Image (cartoon, rainbow, N blue to C red; front, side):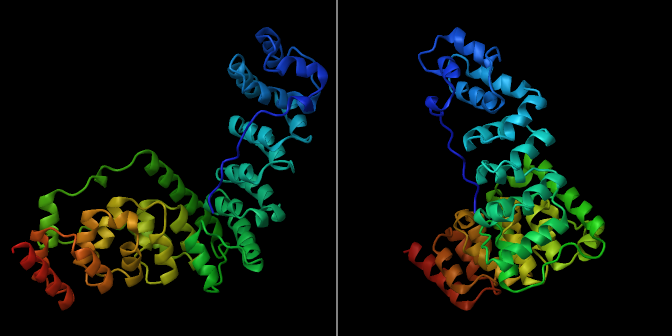
Length: 381
């Protein structure tokens, strides 16, 4: 489940006190609007933020209203957040202010939209994650909040354990966490907070930080392979290039339990996810191949890996976004683990030289090699 954006629009002017209405109507002269934006108009605490929100839509003083909200002292802002507020106003404030006490007051406001809470959950610190997790009714109503907390490495394992148990007991479907949902459907015991949990928790946070850094600085190996390199790979003259496994990383991952590995597959960096995708446990490697951390270069390598789990290859072969790339099609057709029906549907898209190589590939099913030969004959007239 994805987090929907909350639509924001101006409030009904009639809901403001008469003295404030004179400062926010569209036809109000700019100087009067500016007075309100700069806090020069007596305003009840519950209307302080609503007034600025309303003025933020005004072309004359919108920028001034935004700056006023950013600079509003917490002593004034928090009481406003503790009163009844429209969901749009709270969503606007959550975007502009990130102080812990301010955001906590906002999270505790029953008027906050579920979408707003889900967005906050994605980057909240451990304490705020606990506050958000305590509102089980809201989470059951909008499971995306649970999904964002799960993906947030700051959330404590004990907190996540309680949320997973809540989802299991109430048959909540976590569409945004296919790896975790698969493990729940399989009836597996999914306790993260187990054994040396403090070290594991620190490790997951460390991996999540590395993943964020990777997202900000994508590696250069995302460039497509040259035609020559494609031919060399298809002819088998170059061994599959596997990234060297970091022994320290491998040792730490091997000590994790099933639930911890599945969460690492969701929040970890590419190196960790690529390690997990090669695990023998089906729940782990399927959670890893569905990880948003994987890039085109990772899928390119995995699609040609002949020792990886069948389910991983099958998943790649059925992903239209990946199979639209010629290199991945070529790798899959030459990989004996690719289901025959999928390989047969891709072989017609291969270039003639690659079909000739496929004809001589003794590792693929004979039906596929025969089909390649037939296609070459047709193309040669």
